[in-house]
Length: 191
Image 1 (cartoon, rainbow, N blue to C red):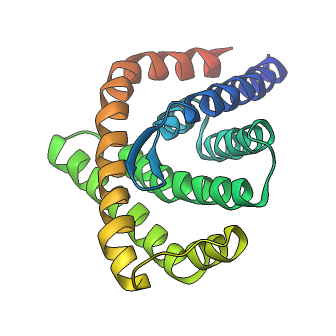
Image 2 (cartoon, rainbow, N blue to C red):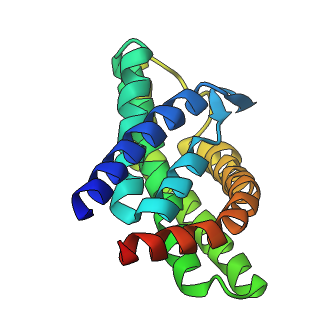
């Protein structure tokens, strides 16, 4: 029965990965070329069901599939790498904090805030040091403003907004699913 559980997990990861890749195509333009999608909600749902490693696997599958379907260009590679890092920067802290602090709303709010800060700080630093200079070089792209201005006027507000939107979409789903997840895990242990 344990082998079936492992197979179920890997099939679930593949399905969630494909679903997350599809959701990545539902984008809302926010600022310039920065677009918001909620595919990280699918990553968080997979983490909730199958654990941390499975959620990271879903994040990897989503960007690999998206990269291949988007034409596999150098610009897409940079963008999809950034999407993977952003997914991990938000989903891992939120998952870990919710599994430890999920019993009261003030603690849940703290988990959301810390995950959003993690996303924002990691993406600001990576955009400042690596992603934006690399993208500008590869795509022959000019910012039209100082890097610091770009980071604080575009990247930071975008990632703060993204964290809030992801939490607002994920949390209602998560708390609806918690009783089912607990029952599912209990049944899996009994078999």
